[in-house]
Picture (spheres, one colour):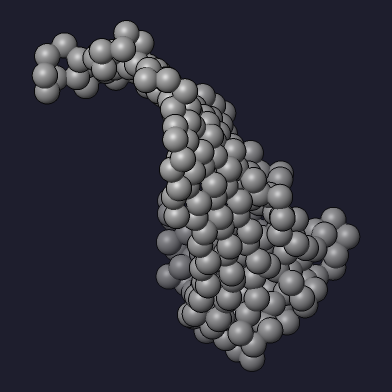
Length: 278
């Protein structure tokens, strides 16, 4: 909706989304044997390719597979998203226009159609997953302000300075928290050390493993973007433009101990500057 009164134009809007994600994630359902050099464990190797040699002898180092009675990974995730915004455009003069806005987003705590949810709430103290909610809670203060301006510097419409800044938010996708479907008691994965080939349960050591898990206290991602552009019309239909487009992105890893490597060719947590002529 929009409403114009004199030099001011107000815009309002809202959105409701209901997310339904159904399907399996058949990780380790068929099992996985691992073969490698076993000479360090006292198995003699007679070739220069020990891993292949032990593979041909059917001597695996380990086996990872789902527990047959706990191998149904089909889930029906549900989540609601509510958003709303208000934006004000104010024509201060024939040469200057200002705008400011505020957006609000709310994401419900995901649920599952049959209540098959569990999570590791505290990796430092918990001995295993706890049946219940995926997250401890979702934030209720996701406010995203935005502001900008357009200045017709000389009043002839040929030279315009524009700028703006704002916060833009994202949500945690089902693909992220959906990995918790691989946790007990609704799904089980066992690892076997030195198993017999084709009979992995006959192994030296057996233990359950939790391959993946989402943090119980997530931080929702957001990006802070700001830009400044100067446009000048040289001839009708030709508009050279030069500006600094500065993008500040903060990606919050669900696992706090994980950090972005500093030796990557790009750094998504740094300010990126782009100068262009178009």
